[in-house]
Length: 302
Image 1 (cartoon, rainbow, N blue to C red):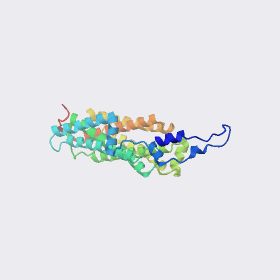
Image 2 (image 1 turned 90 degrees about the vertical axis):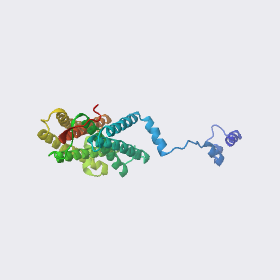
Image 3 (image 1 turned 60 degrees about the vertical axis):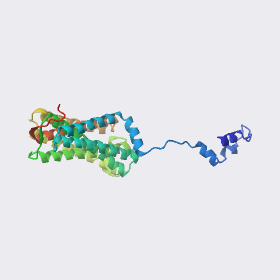
C-alpha cells in the first residue's frame, strides 16, 4: 500500500472549482505494483470441490442420494440374482448418477440463462428424458416390492406399451425444447407466437415448438383409446393406474392450452411438468401390471 499512500499524499494540482478543466493526476497510469495491490487472491478450487460445495447446499439432492443408495443396497441384499427389483434398483441408481453428470455438464459449460447454443438445445431434453428413466426405475422398484409378479415376455400388450411409452418420451423431449424456446424467445402474444412457429423465420428452436402439441394430441388420444380398449376393466392397482393415466391426459391437454393462452407463465409450466411426471408414472405402473406373472417378490416389502 506504500505506493498508493505516496500517490495520495503527493501534492495535487489546484484548480478553480468552477473550471471545466479536469485534474490530469486522476488519469495517470497505475504502476505494476499498484495494480498488484488491487488483486484479490481467492482460494483455488477444482471441479469436484465445487461440485461437493453445490451438493451440500442442495438438501433435496442429499436426501435423494441417501434414499436411492439404501434402495440399491436393500434390493441387492434381499433379492436373488436376476430378480426384477435388482434391475429396477440398478436403473434408479444409474438415473441418479447420469442426472448428476448431465447437470454438472450444463453448469460447467454454462448452458444456462440466455444461452441458445445447439449444445443447450440438446442437453435440456436429454436431462428431462433422463429424469423419466429415473422415475421409471423408482416406479418399477415400488411396483415389484408391493405387487405379485415378475416381468414376462408373453404379454400381447408389450409392443403397444413400449410404443406409447416411447411416444411419451418424445412428448417430454419436444416439450423441453418448447419450454426452452419460450424462455429464450418469449412471444408478445398468442398470435405472434403461432406465426413465429409456423413462419420458420425465428430460428430452429421456435420452429420446433409446433412438434410438441402435435405429438401430445396424437399420442395422448391414442393412449387413452388403447387404455379404454385393453386396460379399463382391470382390477387392483392396474385399474387405478389406467384411470389416472386417462384423466391426466385430459388435464394435460387443458393445461397445455392454458399455458399457451397465458404466454407460458412459470407456475403453469411447473404444473404441466408435474402432470407429465404423474402420467409417466401411471403408464410405467400399468405396463408393469400388464407384463407380469404371479410370482411374489419380497424385497422392500417388509
